[in-house]
Image (cartoon, rainbow, N blue to C red):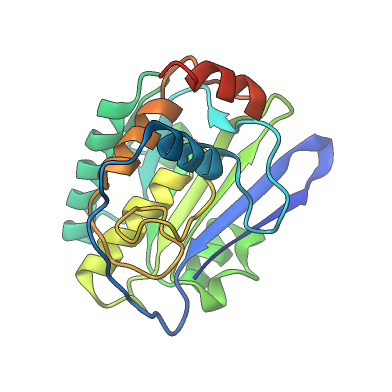
Length: 236
């Protein structure tokens, strides 16, 4: 299962965390996504960009304005490190707003990636996530300012509890993707990276490619309302 929570911080900063999986994953599969009518694609996009699993929808877009400067704590997990580079490359091909680039030190970074136990992630990298990691195998945590611009974040993949390499790769792809600002899940498409149920898909579905292309278009910016986004994509 996927869940989300928001809380208010001092100075009007908000923090969001989203996590993927539970201690008893129930993996399912389904047919490939058929070509969807334009209205269905737009509805899915709006649900992912504005939806909130706790009920009320977000009223504005949350999005990075500057490049994501990503630091990997431990690069010894060779398969995951290679997968991370692959995912970054894919996301940057969609992205016309900002780029994701790896940096060599924490002092250069505004985003941290950790592979290891959730307890260590919470203790050393994201103490605010301490109540979330016990029952969740992957998680991202991001911060944004009053202009709804995301300016800092982190994520982890629990490689101790998640033993399946495909599931590890899935969690990496999902958490990094959603931490760009696409923070909702949906039960609609089994093969989507935004699928609410536990899955281990390791690629973006065609519907995901559309969602990412639209969201990462510079015409969609932090702070835009849902109506403004609807008006913009009406001609897409």
